[in-house]
Length: 63
Image (cartoon, rainbow, N blue to C red; front, side, top):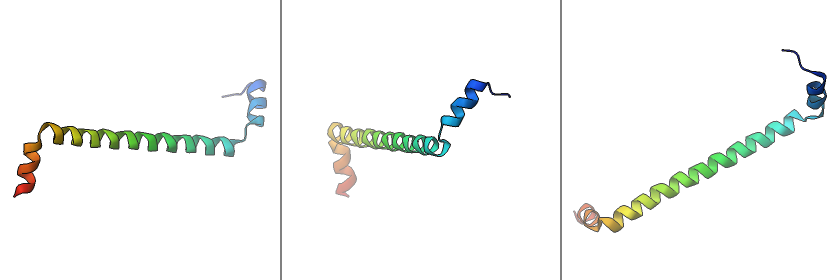
């Protein structure tokens, strides 16, 4: 695949290392955000289950 002169000039101005590092940092941040969201959902389900079915909790820990 041949690059056009415009594409070549644009690539000359791009710092590949810096751009790659920024993309990796952004991906890590998004992954962390996704992890926190999943954890929050799991905790909210646990709390909802406890509130809706306290008898299950009493049975489980009374033995």
